[in-house]
Structures are given as C-alpha cells and as structure tokens.
Length: 156
Image 1: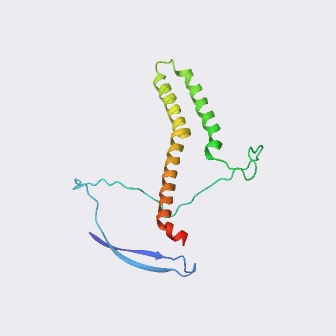
Image 2 (image 1 turned 60 degrees about the horizontal axis):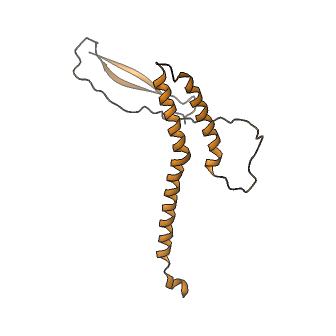
Image 3 (image 1 turned 90 degrees about the vertical axis):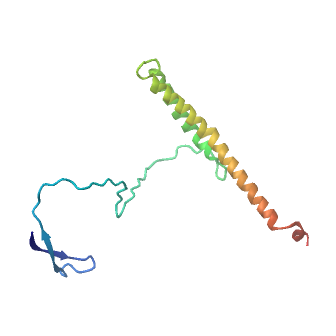
C-alpha cells in the first residue's frame, strides 16, 4: 500500500474565471489482485436526471372548416367521435385481409376484438361513467347546500 496525493481544482460557477483554488487531498492506493466476490447486491430503482427539458413542437396549420358557430355548446364526444370511428373502422378493415391466414388469424381476431371493445368503451361506457359520477357529485352538492340553508332561514 502506498500513499499518494491528488490535487483537485475547485472552480465554482459564482467565482470569476481567474478565481481558481487548488486543494490537496491525501488518498491511499492498493495493488489490484484477483479475489472471490464476498457478496453481491441487486438493487432496483429509477435513474432520473438532475435537470430535465421538455420539448414541445408547434405545428402550423390552417382551419379550413369550422362546423360550429361562436358561442355554441360543443361536447367532447361530438368532436372526437368521427376520428375514433374512422380509425377503428380502417384498422378493422385492414385486419380482414389476414383473417384467413393460419399464422396471423390470432392477431387479426385480437385486433378486431380490441378495436370493437375500445371503440364501445370510448364512445359509450366511459361517458356514461363520467355522467354518473358528475350527477352523483352534483346531487351530493345540492343536498349539502340544502342542509346548509334551512327553510326557516329562507322565509324569515
């Protein structure tokens, strides 16, 4: 085992380029040799950067047609139904070509079933769940307001 000294140059962001200090740190060195591994560890975790950058793109485009007038009430389902339907139908039609193939038939049936199920869920089931949750929340809010203001307080 030998003793050695390493010099580290310390430069901080706040200091000027000419303000550099040198610090000597004593360390011990050993000669490397082959040995059996005494223990090993397996760790799981996530490696995350100290800083991150979010990149967004701006897509330029032109609006050719606007199917509503200013002030009209538009529901999200009315806007998204056509793209969802077109995407599902084109995928299902494309899948029909491999339906009779013995190798790809399983994939074709999985795609057909998945597209039918996801389309039905997206268009009908999930909006009904939101509607039920919203009406339940609204009725709970209405009952809370009714108990907060008794009828006698309103008449006096």
